[in-house]
Length: 259
Length: 92
Image 1: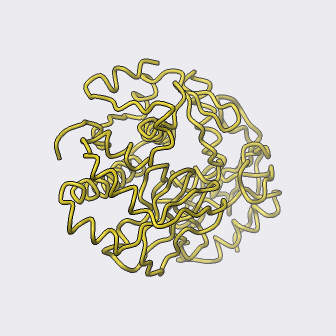
Image 2: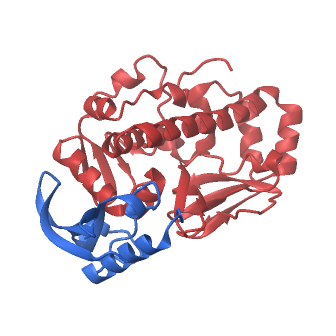
């Protein structure tokens, strides 16, 4: 796989092993723009405490009015809603470095829940601290705005894929996206990422039955595009996977530029 | 309630023919079921093999119904088909 072609046009911020302990939000933002030491300190100091949420537990519930926002340091989380027939739709998957409910700072009441799919390590950032950041750090404020804009761009991309791509293409698209998002925050080992998400959870994400999730993964595997070993997903043919999923990374705004 | 009958068919899934059943209501196709293994439902709360709704028509189709979970046996599948036929306009 030649990821260089994907990143060739950008200055890729490559986290080393030593930076792995860095707040992954900083890694995520540094992919897109330069942060001053003062801004990085402000983000580090914004963390009031770190808590652990076990798999299948809610991190935030629909209807909650949190006075703090949750930043995912490690693990996988999902935004979801449940409809009257009991079916769950996952509207976003979150990885390390994602602000799970930054919008609760302004939206106040949660219109959906956020669930831990795996054990999650979560940093809590009080809304009062976010208010202070928006008062004192205009550039950092723009980057937090960028963060929610990227969330919005991902929603647009997902909606398009959900409505108009085949199930197999949709899955390929999701795998391409998750791989790049995990790579940016130093969670990829070469061509592999840990993806501890069940077929049922993927089904709730893609709007597919578990049976169809199993079939499309088998199709991608048989075509030599991906390999699963336990929770480890390896991309065997990045170019073809991108082509199948009609994936272009523009919406992830990976370019490092002044913002 | 129209008479519901089953007709064994082979369904093309995963690039090969798989054991399936065509469900007819008064002779009209309303559903195509195929046999699936427990592995194919891995990750569900109850991991079971059984019968999967490959395609549904009319009240059993995607305009009126979401894909139901895998049915443990054909009796369960037919019970679901009957309920859908009886329900009339009730998108789920």
